[in-house]
Image 1 (cartoon, one colour):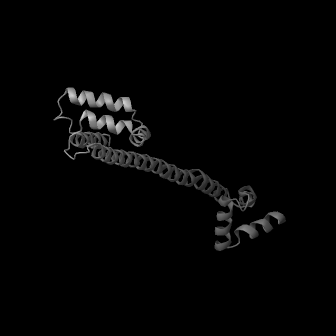
Image 2: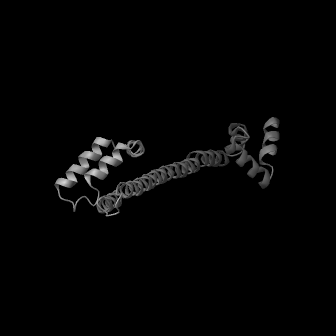
Image 3: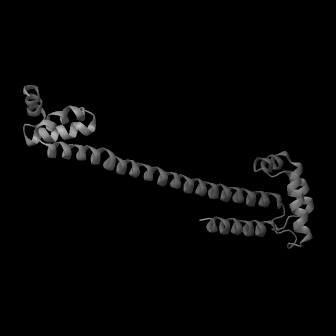
Length: 178
């Protein structure tokens, strides 16, 4: 029992020494079985309390810490999704502003109306065609849209008004997705 007494004094001699032993036992600085052995010979209550301490510390407290970490990761993921949605909405707003600028550019006579002739001239220029393609809008789609709006008699194709309505639809859709 002499080696046991030395180990007992080494780890459990005083309250501060015991606290250090408890801390080192759960933090990996000391094998908890090494600190446990001398307690077995001294008291079964001390032995049982130490086992319960290790169990609670490792399994309960560390699980709470892990749960908090996982919860933060989930919230961060949700925040990332919200940021992506906001970026997408801002991108759409930028596209609509650019589209308004295109319609203003097409409307040479500043009548807020785009005629077939003005559209033909604008689409024949490579600058506008390239810009529309960069927005994933093909020139044939522009023609189709123009003809549909013309068939619906959208006030002789008041494009800017149509873009405003389109922007309202996009904003409404983004509000309902939340």
